[in-house]
Length: 323
View 1 (cartoon, rainbow, N blue to C red):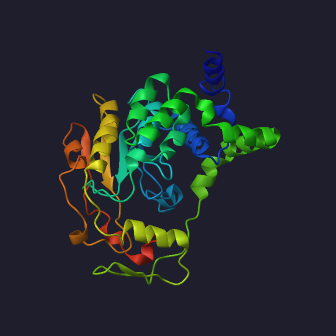
View 2: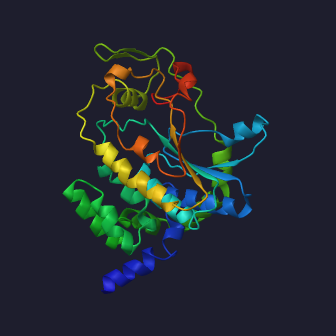
């Protein structure tokens, strides 16, 4: 009991989370959460928040520079590498009244819930993103949402004793505590401005060619390993066996987000992102009824036009395989 009590004192209060490394998954999640909580305090009544991974990348600064009349104040609470399980905990703690936003926009790769090689239910990175947010009452539901028994045990164990996840961060802190504290303070002051002034890469995928008959890829000069890997895994891959894994995952976690806002005036908008610099042919994609289109039938849920971003699906508009 003593170990559990000490773990709770350190990691279930603001004590240690306030000095987490901002460059870590957990630290970045908390930094974004704090930034958006602060924005709520000064924002008006027309806030709209977007959640997604790095594919949902837009520049508020560019939008402001365009001088468009802003009926809504657009906020970004997404985080690179995240998925619906992470978004649930972000939104739950970011909007406890379920009335702070006019709309919540969630960005998806597709509406067909097509399984690919990756396995969102078994993405253990989620544990690190949401570690500070996990309450004792959350641990079983969170852990049981993994399909791999070993990952279920890891999530259950680490969700109870959070210090197991923070071991590496603690060692780094103890090696240079003053530097860590100063860096945390710097990030707390500057992160919002850095995100606003961020300049995206000027590189493009012009020259990319894919022979869909044999999935042979011709890459443009200067393509790096990340871009090559993204093209192979996201576009130039054979149709995977369809087990309904992604549909089950989305039904659970998107469903839980929608349930959060049941009875709330907040609208839930599901948005399909551009498919890539060269769209994958429909003949290679496996269509199914899935879960996303079913969820869109619930009250207060809207499905954005599936082809709204087709005009962006060209190599000159993309610095990566996935735009």
